[in-house]
Length: 234
Length: 311
Image 1 (cartoon, rainbow over the protein chains, first blue to last red):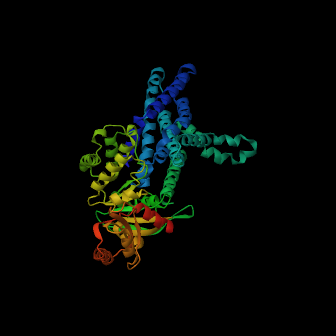
Image 2 (image 1 turned 90 degrees about the horizontal axis):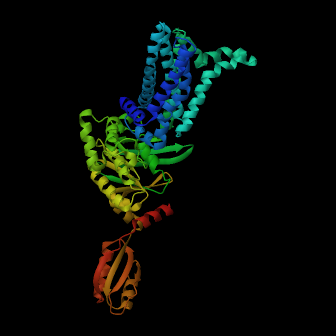
Image 3 (image 1 turned 90 degrees about the vertical axis):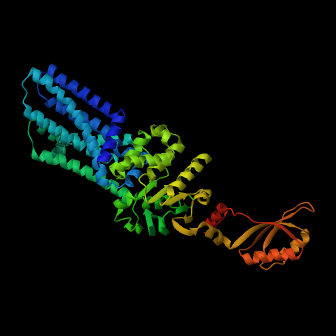
């Protein structure tokens, strides 16, 4: 598992992907944070977390698109299948590499706290819960991306497919705003990632939100595992 | 020892490999021969644990292919038809990565990688990025990963296809050296390759095993005949009469030539030493000088293809 993790990290940092994703994430989230702090005069991180979650809808697929699609297209999945590594451990190694990149991106945003501390006396409660929330949301994004990447050999298709699922999961709560569909509003609101993101930035550690996001991560990890099992044993 | 029993694989409801059984002993090189689409790759993929059989099994040193697959994978080196390379890695980094994947003990990893580099003659390329290597070198790096860690069973899927003649010859030498105590299964549709490399062959067509055995046995089993070239001195008509009156009525063809020059005869007769010596005695008794007797090498490619067609 650690060997796969190491190889994936090597791949991220050998290619420009990691540097581009980290730079774009920090630049855009930094821009929105500065706009919120200096223009709207809102001295909290809540807008920043919201913007980060939306930004990750577009950037998480770039992190995950090559995880399995590239192995399939280059034939190296055959190499991994013939090695004494279980499919479960292989996927954990790949998932953890994606999570590491996410963690590096989020750690970069800690510099936002410096102007916040200079200009105000922030309440750290919602900041830490916000970080917990964005980390759990990012983990779910990466598990979804890992699964979609297992379905295709084409990295662009993997990225677009992941983006489509993530956007659907983000905006699905708004289905209830159609009058005819209001009776099913509640389940859609619950499965929408944006609902849970709102809970975390308010400083709440909502047990059901944590369980939901971990379950979403587990579900898509399981689907990716099933997909590879079928490829090998089907 | 590898023992394959009734291996069968279906893909999308179609039987790709059906009831294949064969054994392989230490140090043997087995040629897996058949036309494209015969089921060679699927069989090798099953043995490499890349896909599971629908039924049947194989045991390697007593370990079961399906139930002990993680243990079996530690003992296997597999080179698919397209070498599985991480193009962004340097050759040495790639081999170090594969050594870790294979579970080579940490203290042995460096030596194992060096040995593999040395055996495949890729020392000068060790610091080069794989994506920038030529086809021949890429194939060698692929072979280097397969032999890394001294596997008990080496599975090579058409390792010489798309290489030029010089590269083919080098690759053949590397495989021969790599074999040692290792069992090697070598798939190819280039029949010349099996003549040069393999101890035994398995012929496979439409997913079914058609023949297995030693190459020389195969040649005998072909049609039970032997081909000889005789160089004789004597009267052509007399030679023709003697050959026509031989027991078993061998087929023969007398090469046209000048009067007085040695007469060359190609003869296709029963594969029997007694029959051959009887023929030679008769010729000598009739005052025909026998200058030379040589076997005509059979064109294995032709005979195997004939066999395949007849099937």
